[in-house]
Amino acid sequence: MNVVLLGPPGAGKGTQATKISQTFDLEHISTGDLFRREISNQSTLGTKAKSFMDRGELVPDEITVAMIRSEIAELSKGFLLDGFPRNVEQAKALSHMLRDEQIDIDYVVSLEVDQQHIIDRMMARGRSDDTPETIRTRLEVFSQQTAPVIEYYDQQLAVHHIDGNRSIDEVFASIQGVLTREGQV
Ligand code: AMP
Image (tube, rainbow, N blue to C red):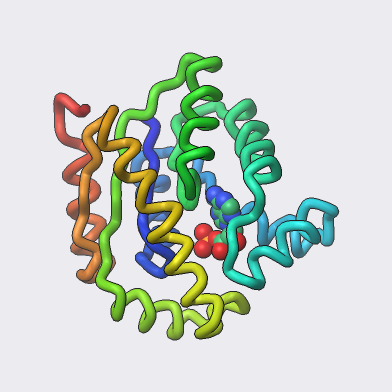
């Protein structure tokens, strides 16, 4: 089973992604986590990514897509993509990559959370890129670049919209319901 999890920054994607990948035995691929690992390893890729992340902007597609390509090539089980794709170009690149490998996306889940909740959650987690300034930029990036990804998938697969303004367990129960339902997309 292969799942794409979409949602604004601060929607709780990382938390849900961890629970989903454990429950359904999926490879959790988080581009944010991959970049943070590269930064802590002080790699060239990490250094390039950091300047964009510190501003709340997207890391350029050529870097991000290449990183995902190597993750996909190494897969030995189903995947859960968390934080990718973040724009329509990335979604198209993913479609091409998966077509080449004859892999299908089974579910697209969109976590939806009210703006005020997002800001409260991001301020509460206190990550170094969670300053008021970058939060504003990331929300803008989401509405301008990532929201169209939901429409992109809506045209080809049924996107499952999940109300993320609830407790972790309630949100997870809804997602679990979607992923265990028969006769998927
Ligand atoms: P996240 O942990 O998913 O909130 O990602 C943290 C930061 O990593 C984002 O604000 C971006 O700067 C960068 N990033 C993560 N995923 C992507 C992606 N798919 N495309 C470009 N940049 C990304």
